[in-house]
Image 1 (cartoon, rainbow, N blue to C red):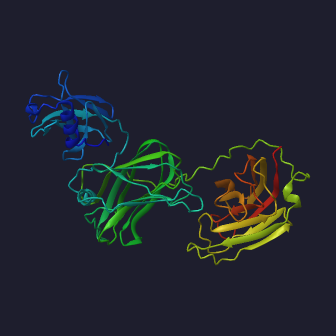
Image 2: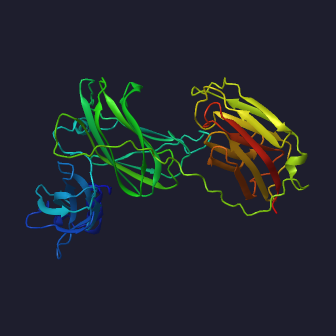
Image 3: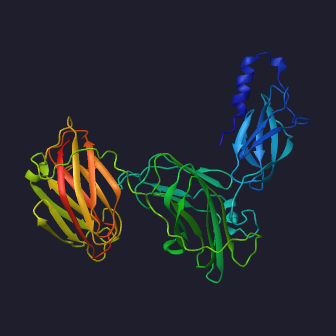
Length: 466
């Protein structure tokens, strides 16, 4: 949203151009100046009529119900998130200040929608909007675009009139790494005696898989009305729930997580509506079948073009010393689980059984192969292995500098998938380190693998590129 130009700044500029003290301008009037409104889909442009000069228009629009500042300038363009009949209110300003009066113009925005487009945001029954109207300054974010959770980064929310804009400059790797907590200043209370409907509209510039929606008690994340995931397409999306049994909560917040976003994802969250199901707002929400989201898309390996020679002398893994370490944890990250593992064939075939109680998140099932293989920053390398699991599983492959695996990574792929009982071949070519490594380390993380599954990693190869 464009910012309102300071009237004092405008006055100072205009006075500097006209030093004659006796020619002070008078406060302007908007009377008789009819705004020119041009609608192009969701994009609306406001301008002064031809022939009017020396004035700066200030625009207010009423898409949220009340008139709120939209921007200033001639022309000024605004994108509307929903269609409808609206008004624009125009004040004008000059070096003396802003007019006391204003003029208005009506216009209509038509945005084609298919199917259900959310509950009625402006309905008297929308209890979320009542809390939202009191302010949203308690809202906050958690953003950690790092596979090792080591890069928590400030992420501002740009507040609009009932809308919230967030830009994720860097993509994330897993659920809960890109959280948006929307917390109304006016408490939005729920009762276990009621059932509830809720809808949230989300516009994105890129598709995002596995987005989490959760309405929860502000004092307890375990006391929630719902937690669901939905894959978002590029463009407009509607998330909704219908007729859910209520909970007792004195105040609630809406949490959205975009943990599988990619670089440069821009998100607008708007028209959040929450109501007692017994109150009819005139919308007709269809029954909602359970949706199993596709979740994260598998990583695409950048380059696989090489000639792997597992048995040959060029395979540095065959002559290396390998120290095996593993670390398994429940959801509490205490690292107290013990995994049953062994070398079936020393240094060439590793097998592990996932322990009961595994937490289910990346890095909660770490298998580290610490080698004595040196890596030169002047050379390129290829890596190969095969993963076989007795259950479907996501897994991670990471090559890095031993002892400095966060600062110096040769490669990281955190969203690789192995289908049950099907060998998954991993080939990564043309790897080049940023610095010389005294020794290379390999991580295979199986934290997302079901307990009791047996996983074999074999056919290791690390060679100079060929």
